[in-house]
Image 1 (cartoon, rainbow, N blue to C red):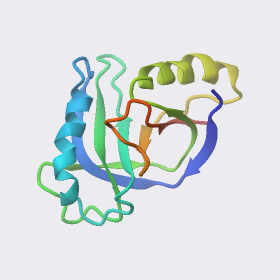
Image 2: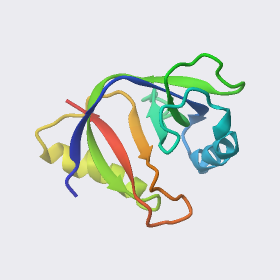
Image 3: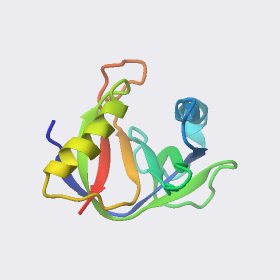
Length: 150
């Protein structure tokens, strides 16, 4: 499983936020909460692409922030109860995966591919990119996870 190396400029995601360890599939529930509210997000750059942004990991507690949302042009008129996440410019290793295999793919990326590659983890937020062809009801549907590298 060889990733694509991609560079992304800085961008902003607006959506709903979770903070914790995801011990009880809270992120799945977060997406279920975001689904009916997607139309509330204004100035969306591409309504066919959603992002999961995972960052601000507390190494001591293992808690992190996760935002399910859209890339936006601006955060003006942000819907009530939603938040923004500023994603910095970065180079990423992009791995295609499915929802059932996401944990295994992250494990492979960090514990197999990265140590054997010429790259190092760069820190910063990890991304899930759900394109227009992604269907959350289809367990074989592909999306990309992006790991920041240097």
